[in-house]
Length: 304
Image 1 (spheres, rainbow, N blue to C red):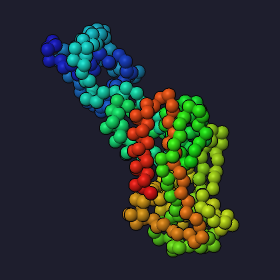
Image 2 (image 1 turned 120 degrees about the vertical axis):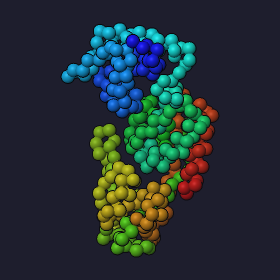
Image 3 (image 1 turned 60 degrees about the horizontal axis):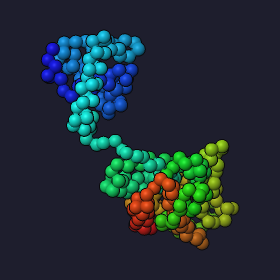
Image 4 (image 1 turned 45 degrees about the horizontal axis):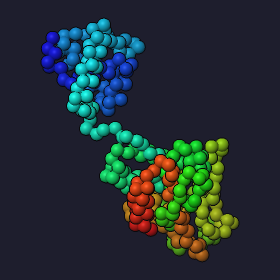
């Protein structure tokens, strides 16, 4: 045996083998490829001249000697960690806490880069869990204390535990694929020849459909396919003749790339929705709330 050749990383692997039913499960938990974990195990067996594992149809089974070595390795690793406070599987420590953010899918997609940067810079010990929620789901999640933040179009009834403040607004506009027959500006009567993508979501009990928010007479509008997110609507209109009335911020990149065009609608008023940030009073420190409010507000102002 050449115990002096065994690394602390290999000792840690040896100590954790009993807790996983397969090398694949262990590799997945540690963020490694299964082949890398197998190579480490073979290295340990070679260095110690001991068979640590037996392979079976049920996964991996420690040999008698392997089980003993695993226990001893665990004791050694515990002492090493205590003395050196080492993170052997990476240099980044676990989050001390995770805060849940609930919002519509397109708002999460727009804000994830700026929020990710903010938390990494200012709150490195705090993780964010961003969940796509419909307004009904946001209401339920807030009422049952399953979210810490929420971003919504207008104010929602989230209960007395939440503070809501307006942080900006987003404009809506009508879009079509680049090769579409319609040319801007279009009259409401021209719209009647094409379908407009509709919104739909799950409210916890059933599928709920809603209108497209375009403020023209309903007699000139034809309902198209139903989708939950603006991003899905954006993808849909690039391969069909349907139109989508969605936030400009969602469509900006596709417009720059030349795959879609904005259509001005005659006599239709400009639609702008206020965006509200809600935070749970008891879970969020005021300093964090103010930084998030400022970051989101500045970002939305740049988009406007």
